[in-house]
Image (cartoon, rainbow, N blue to C red):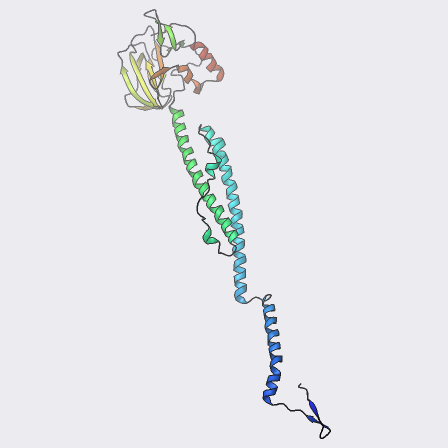
Length: 323
């Protein structure tokens, strides 16, 4: 409600009603209107800090959800890193040790990404620190995963190699002789039964009746099966790969053919006394890179430690050879 104003008139000695024109009224009202408007705007600005628009509310919810997703992703990445670390530990301390391979140095496993800043394009994003941290973890995890995958491929190859190696290398007695009564002569210089002089004996002699089965001591390929001209009589030679071969001499019967693939324990022939021999026996040789080595060192697969010690003792007796 507007206030009525009066002005004293000295001539009439009365108070006259003051009347303003529209213009004066408008000019008089302007400062008040401005103050009201200014206060209203200030109030709206102040309130806007506490009251969200629908669009702002939508953006806030989306941002909160993204931050939550990033945090969950970081937790999963940390869990995956722990699992990968356990695989790396087994890789170095178990798998590589079994297959006699050098462990992988830690600095090779965790090689970084040197050089340019790979995450510069992420620095302008909201919550850039969280985004960059997650991106770095994912890149490191991917790098280590690829490296570990290659390492496990290598371990697989080593396992296949080792499996084939263990199946191939000579490791059993070529005849059945659990009591070692058939062990007649060992590897090394021995008295020759015919020439009566000390001569290098490049294998071992195992006595048994004619017709006794002879077994392959490792997996391999027959490269000779037939008679020989060097005093061995009927002979079989098997190539086992990895530099190894075995020779079985003075056989009565040969049960394999040239080029035939055999496995450890297969019957390949029978004992005889063909060639330069004084009695039925098997002359057995193990060769590594074409050089004869002591066959008793390759008896480890079917003997106990005590039995192995016994056969080493027998092989060192200065007996006469049978061929």
